[in-house]
Amino acid sequence: MERLTADERLTLKTGAFGAVFLVSNAVPGVLAMVRESFAASGALAEVGGVVKEALTTGPLPQLPRDSAMEIESVVLPALGRSVEILRAKSPDDVETYRSVVLAAAERVAQAHRGIEPAEAAAIEKIRQALAESA
Image (cartoon, rainbow, N blue to C red; front, side, top):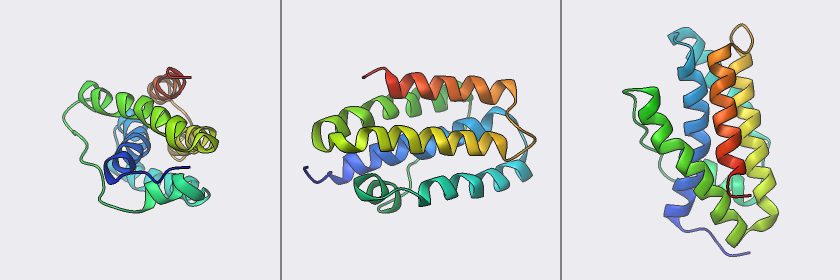
């Protein structure tokens, strides 16, 4: 297993945090977003190793906030790239990353009145982005 560079850690973090942001942004509501961020942080706290290091160290990713399409254009490629990085440097952590990102996204969606159609659509895009490089 090779150590991840700062840029690679930021890519993993951009994908994971961006996935949570994408889902929480799918259904508007500031109060919901606060609740959802706490739900997601629980999922991230349960991982270890390379994935935990990548998601808990270094700067927070800069995510666009203007539109869902703009967010997707940053987040979805970052998720696919994250899987490629882990496959190359820490193959044992690929499934951990996929599962923690999906768990966080699903927790966010369920944190406020259950999963709504827009949130389910966002989660499906995240799932596809994580699987594309499989």
